[in-house]
Image (cartoon, rainbow over all chains, first blue to last red; front, side):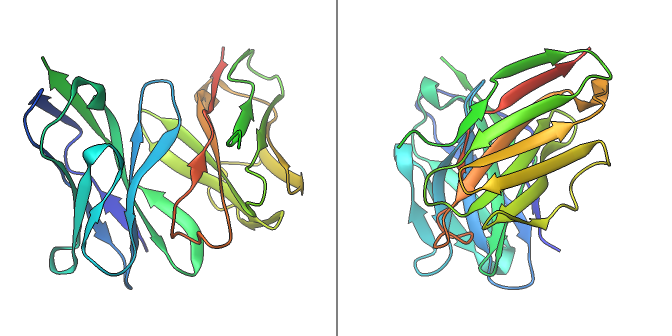
Length: 113
Length: 116
């Protein structure tokens, strides 16, 4: 069965610092992988996705993620965070022939001024 | 495009009452998903439809929950009778056939349900 693990419930970084949010997945075949962001009181917005090709994918708002099959990971990165990046981030996994997407528990990002 | 539209945004009801949540997917999207979000359990997939047909309802917590999609532009999630433990944010999301897990879902803004 598909599953997603985000090991960090909370992450705090200073504004301008680099960011890496961890995501590990479990899936028997090649997965489709996603990162979503949720601001308080809002729905989820797709940041980026991966399902084939270049393992380093670029997303919106300056985010990128790298798919590492050997580590079953899809970590999200940003070289320099802004206060507006404070939000909750969800990693998710899906499959080509299945419409379902399974979400991780989320990582809440706090930004220090 | 107006996106996925959910109503109401907030709902406060008394235990035992019937609650109906509504969702209008993006035009042209043929898959629709209902999720529930709580602090304890995160985002849980309750049910999803493809071409208005329920495909997987294994996430529906119990018989008090039911969902319908009478046409391509409308879906409801009903809780009858409601209980305090149903308090959560309920999200609707839709995707097009080409997405199939590819481009990802588009989420609505959610309905915050409080059962007192």
